[in-house]
Length: 567
Image (cartoon, rainbow, N blue to C red):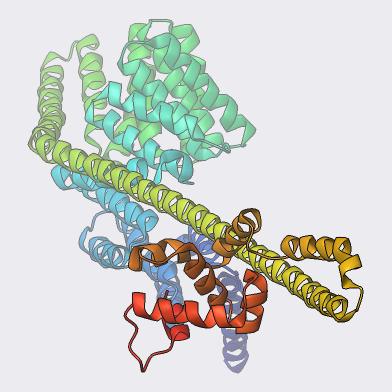
C-alpha cells in the first residue's frame, strides 16, 4: 500500500513539474502575438486531448497567469478555449460552451482585439448551427466573416482558409452550392501549407460539384483529396474520399469501377472509427448488390448498416438504409415489409426536408439583417477610408504649409541677411568716404598754412602761379561740388534711409545748403569738420544753424541736434 502511495506521489509530482515546464514556454515568448500563437498550438495539439478534469484545470490555471501579467490576448483566448473544449467534448450540451464564448466575446470587444473577436463569433456560430439554431448561427458566422474580410483582410489573416472552409461547409449543408463552391475555392486559394483541413476542403468541394451534377470537377477534387491523404498518410481520408469518388461511378452506373473504391472506403472507415462514413457506404454497397441481383450480399451489408444506424442515430444514414431495405424487401417479394420501410423513408425524407425548410426560413428571416450588417460594415470601412483620406490630405496640406512657411522664413532670413550686408557695406563706404574727406580736410589745412606762409614772404607776388595751383587743389578736396554731394548723398541714403524725403516733407522751406548741414549733423560731426567739408567758415555754420532754427520754429530749450535725431 505504501509503495503504491509513493508511486502515486512520484507520478503526481513528476506530472506537475512536466505540466509547468510544458506550458511555461507560452509565457517565455517575447511578444504577445508569439505567446498567443504558442498557446493556440499547445491547446490544439495537447490540452484538447486531455480528460476534462486535467484540461479544464490547465486552462483555468493558464487564464489566471494571463490575468496576472495582464496579457489581453491570452485572457481572451483561454476563456474562449474553455468554450471550444466544451463544444468539442460535450456535443449534446450548448450552455457551458456558450457561456464561455459570451465571456470571451465581452473581453475581445473590450480590448478591441479584432482577430479573437472574429474567432469567438465564428465558434459561437458553429456551436449554434450544430444545435439547429440557424438564425443566430448565421448571424455570428457572418459577423466573423465580415471582420476577417473587411476589417482584417483574408490575405493578412493567418487562419482565413479555416474560416472560409467552415463557411463553405455550412453553405453545402444548407444546400446553397454556388456559395459553398465560392468559399471553398477561396479557402484553397488562401491555403499556405497542406494539412488535413486541405483534404477536407477538396473533399467538400468535390461533394459540392457532385451536388451540382458536375461530375468531372467532382472527380478531380476527390482524386486530389486521395492523393493528399496518401501524402499525409491519413488513411481515414483516403477511405472517405475514395468512397465519394466511388459514389460518382455508382450514379453513373459504373458499378465495377465504383465497387473497389467503396469497399476501400468501408474498410478504412471502420478502421478509423468513421461510423457515419462506414454506414453510408454499406447502404450504397447494398444498392449495388441489389442492382447485380445479389440479395444475400445486400442483406448482409444492410444488417451491418443497421447496427451503425442504431449506434449513431443519424437521419440521413437512416434514410439511405430504409430506401435500400425497401428495395431488398421488394426483390424478396416481401411487399408488406417493403411498404413499411417506404413509409419510414417518407417520414425521414420529410424530416430532413423540414430541417432544410427551417434553415431556409431562418435564412430568409436573417437575410435583411445580414445584408444590413454587411452594408453597415462596408459603410464603416468606407467612412474609415474617407477618414484616412481626409487625415492624409490634412497631413499633406500641413506639410505643404510648413514647407511654404519654411521657404518664406528662409527667404526672409536671406533678405534680412542681405539687407544687413548691404547696410554694413553702406556704413563701411560712408565711413571710408568720411575718412577720405577727413584726409582731404587735413590737406586743405596744410594748403592753407602754405598760403599763409607765402603771404608772409616779401616776394609773394612772384609766387602767384603757385598760389593759384594750391587754390585749385582746395576746390577739388571739398564737398561743395555737385558731383561730390551726389556721391555723398547716395552713400548717406543707404545708411539713413528716407532721411532726405522726411526732411523735405516736414520742412519744405529748407535750402540745399541747410539740408547738407543737417545731413552732416546726423553723422555727429563737429562744427569744424562740417565747415571744412562744406568749404565754409565755422561762423557760416553757426549762422546757418540759426536760420534753420527759425525756419523749423525750434523752441529755445531744444537744441538742433535733438531735432536731427528724430528725423
